[in-house]
Image (tube, rainbow, N blue to C red; front, side, top):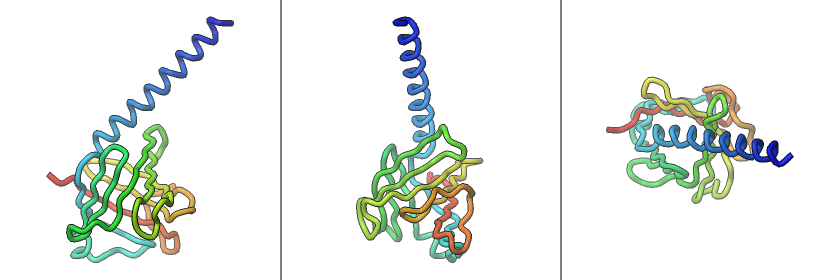
Length: 145
């Protein structure tokens, strides 16, 4: 009995360590400043000139969004790289959505970060789209050098 319990505990710890390692690798890839090339809000694309004004900064456990150098959103970020698609949760520390959880998904493919975030208290998006009426925000970004 003790042997089985010990094996179960070891397996659980190994799985948890693997989960943390996956998230650490994802955070390493996510960390940095990202320049959006596309932003859609509720199915409506922002004009390219407006998109250029934004910068998204990600680091382990944190996110910030600036427009023309001014902070417009920041707070805590959590990811789960074991899910498909990978999950990203944001909790703002300022503004109208302060302390509200926004659920999202993300992927990094060919140097492009794509993520979709729902409005607070809405279900997590399942597709990389911002359909009209969904309330979702879709961003496609390239890492700044």
